[in-house]
Length: 273
Ligand SMILES: [Ca+2]
Ligand SMILES: [Ca+2]
Image 1 (tube, rainbow, N blue to C red):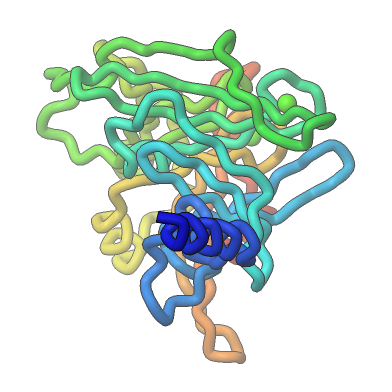
Image 2 (spheres, rainbow, N blue to C red):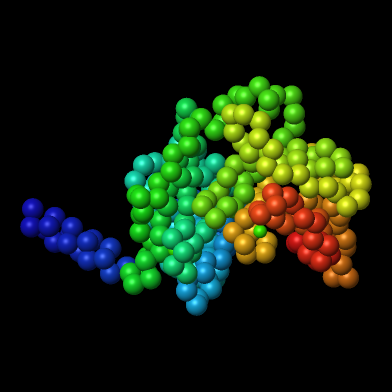
C-alpha cells in the first residue's frame, strides 16, 4: 500500500511539473497529426482590439470550450472560456462567432450564437475585463430569438445565400438573393422583410456566376468601421506576377441613415484575397 502511495505521488508530481503539451490545451486535442495548427481550418483567425492593443488571434470552438490563442508559432492561450450550456450546433456557432465592443468600453467582446433544435436562437456574450485580462460571461446581455429558422413560405423556391451581418448590437442573420442586376438582402425572419438592395455596376461574368453558385454562406463584415456590416460580392480574379490569384469584389457600404447600400469603387479596386 505504501509503495502504491509513493508511486501515485510520483506520478502526480510529474504531472504537475510537466510543461503543458500542445494537446493539453482546450480545443487543440483534435488538430490532425502533421498539420500546422495555425493553418488548421477549425481555428478562426481574428483581430481583437483591446484598448490600445491590437492582437491577432486564432479562435477554436467546440461544444463546451472557446479558446483564444495568440497567432504565433508557439501555441499559447490568451484566454479559455467554458460555456455554461453546451452548444447545440457547433458549426453554426463557429460560423457566426462575433467580435464586437458590446459595452462600448474600448475592448472587444465576444458573442457566441447558438441555434437550438426548435429553431430558436440564443446569443451569449463574454466581455473583456481589462483588469483581469480575461473574458467574463455577461448574463445581462443574453438575447433569445424565437424560431428564426422556421420553414417559411416566402423563402420557398428561391436560392438564397445565408449570411450574417454585423450590427452595433450583435449579429443578424440574412438571406441574400442574387438577381441581376440586383443583389437583394432580406432579414432571416418569419415575414418577408427586405433589408436593402445593391445594384451591380456591371453584369456578372460567367466566372462570378459559377463562383456564386457554390457559395452557401456570406459574412457581411463591417468594412468602414461604422458598426454595420457591408456587402462584398466576388466579381473577378486576376493572376499576379508571382503566380498568386487575387480575388476582387464589388464593395457596397451600408448607409444606415438612408437604408441603402452604396457602391464603393475605391474599395472595389483592391483585391480581397
Ligand atoms: Ca467591451
Ligand atoms: Ca459598415
